Image 1 (cartoon, rainbow, N blue to C red):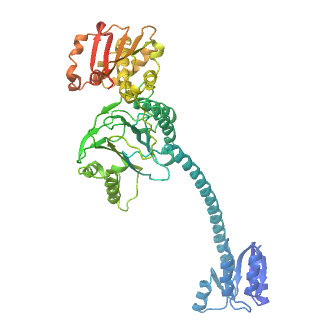
Image 2 (image 1 turned 90 degrees about the vertical axis):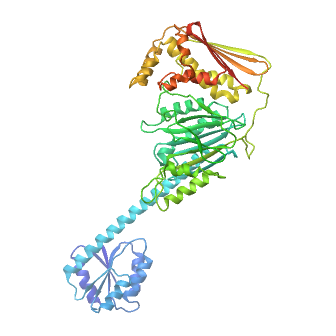
Length: 561
């Protein structure tokens, strides 16, 4: 280690050099402050400076001040070696930038101890500086990578810039990357699709699932896919992509072009709140399904619900971050405060709620991603003209019939119903009915398969582990099913109104049709059974439901107008 000795007396230079060299330090010299400054600037190997106070040309105090100003990229301890003993003079030395002082005559042990101590400090400073440089480099690298990822996310999640006037929303991520996702896209039939969801966790790890969801959503909404198809495809993708401790709570919806029908699939997310035009929550659309990404294809339930809200009804949808926002005392905002904000009319409930939540939090940190969406149920309007509504009078000039004979191989396909619905989706007649038809066909085919061909007893579901046992038996029997079939017939008849007749016939043993009549008037729901709701659902969707051939055939009529 090289030590610079600064003194205008040769005796002092020789004495200090002798002491240092005897302990393996290198010495270099300067006889005034200016020489010391020049030497330090030109020699990066100097590690410690022993500085006299009173010298010609430039004294030690001024030299110390200028050295500290000139050398900012490294720490060089400066120890004053002085005969001064006035407190004021010593204080001025330290104020000028000196790090320590030692009195003349020099005590060798004290001098060496102080040099060693200051070298330790200098080494720590150098280590800290190098660590900071590495951290700065990694921070720049991380910022660059984040900028790239953010660019990809923005392009991926905002692929469609449709400005639907029926929608208002606020998004407030907890960090740079958002585990909440809100997507909206125009439907070819003139309505609007939307997805609001919340991935497990926060930040980049939670946001990573948003891209495949957006890809599926935009691709399928452009093809007028049903909500059931969307939910099925997103679940299939996420189930194979996400780790076991992650899932996607979501609401997937479509509002029809005239705004009088809302089709929705809700899994694991908060209730959708229907607010009347005069204010107040009039109905809750509760989650009926597991979150996406949890269940296998054969376990997944894509059943879609439909409501017909009065004109002007608002649908308020939100993620957990809203009601779980905390004040500085750790108390949550809660559902009661949220619903109180919906009790009176507002031009924009989203703004009212968002401002109330921020006011409630005050200085408390945001602990979760927050997303709010408000959907007004009225004829769908777009400001940018992206919606391209198909034209047509909704009827076909010629009737037609589609027939399928489904063998065990076809019945084992998880996307069987989606394929049938996809055939219908190419016709304008069915575009606004695809979700209901998906639900209807799923119930009809599953009933024939499970109770006709596989001979499963729904009473199994009444036990503690009933659902798990039921679907395990379903999977096992379907895998070993060698014979049997289900015939599916779709018949479009058009006179003054369009009606779709659906006939499903299986080769099973059938069932007691008369006993089924006792299930009418929603007796199943009154008994709170875990089965039988599919029958009520079919009846609620169709004009007529008729069983024949000992229960092996069911004929339903669905009105398309």
